[in-house]
Image (cartoon, rainbow, N blue to C red; front, side):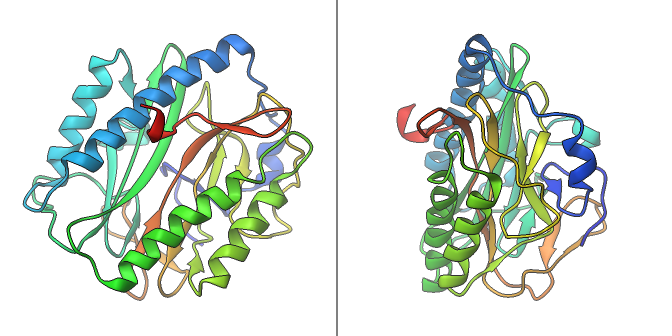
Length: 275
């Protein structure tokens, strides 16, 4: 597994038992209302980017749009400057798994599988979400990977309610990915989100004894973010010390939502259909 300290998704190899002892925040109704706003900003930006992107644009163009819109809505970009990350979005194309750095040299082309991940910090709380965009006409394999990746995040979210536990989420994600003959990336996990961009607990996307099987409680806010590869589950980090790519050059897709745990189920705070 990759050992990096400056990742925007939590590296799975970090000791979850140690992190667990620092505690999991239960948000108050007032804090949840603020998080609804930060998450709405993120959802709005991602929806706009999904409608804006076209071949010939650069990932720097998308980054500029995201930063402008986040600031216009009264927030600041969560990612920019986070452990030195230079962008307001992560923009990862095709075999790039996560943490791609926006660049005016990175031109988006027809057939690309484009992941856009962003966050907004509003009145003391973060929202965090990621989408995968099929740019123009993509291959049948790419289209199926994107479809299954989006199905998978909802399979995990459907397990969210007070009284369930993190293993319920991990198992639902792992089972759906394997049933569709794709690989779950194990090097990165989801996480708690709120006052900090990354909080307790780690939200694994596969069954593992390394994960404390935390019971979900109403008021928890989680970033659930399975990452699927068409080939090998293994990744490596490029020389920029940020961008993770598949070791076998296979395609990768990811969806992420910030989700509130309720007594009876969940609320998707970054729901793009509601903005």
